[in-house]
Length: 267
Image (spheres, rainbow, N blue to C red):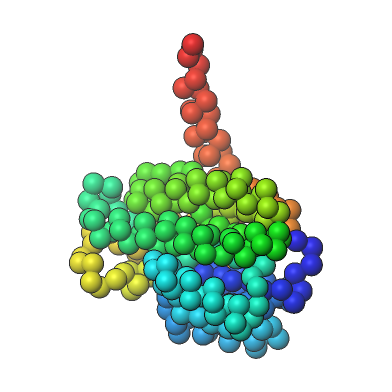
């Protein structure tokens, strides 16, 4: 992972937030960046930012809920840029609200984007990485992949699942020389509170509201560019997990302490 210059990176959800930060950071390393986003205008904007900074980028509209879209992304990547070396399964959406209030539409949307989008991206791109016995898969989870409750239970459920997928991928792909890192950011200056605009209109109304995330993101937020730099450091080290906010260490430690305590007295 030391020499990235001239290689190809693919970033889903690259049109804004952490995805845009990753695109900018990877391009600064000399990589050609393929910007995938369901919002075509946002993807184009990220590509333009990269190119104005002297990098090389191409935007490919992609809805990660659809495997066929991800397959087209892989084909387009090979055709216009070359074989992928870093693949960032980063696309994600959010709705907040009490668990028992959530509708099937809320659940299906978040599961399809946050979980199945990662699964499709891994299944489609991993064979190329395995064939070259090199490269890296960065999977964006969240501190919400270890902590649940409040107004984030549906989001956290999907991110818990993403953590499980990432851990399994690390074991499977590691035997083929391919690294896998789980990025677990905390509060970040992103567009997630505006995710309502991306909800598929044909699925009917949901009870959740993405704007409920906004107050949480106001608590010591980091910029997407700062998150991206932390992520790249983890990629270079082939770290299993990358956390961005040390203040969550205590909460996650308490959670695992409770899990371990449950083994006390078990015979």
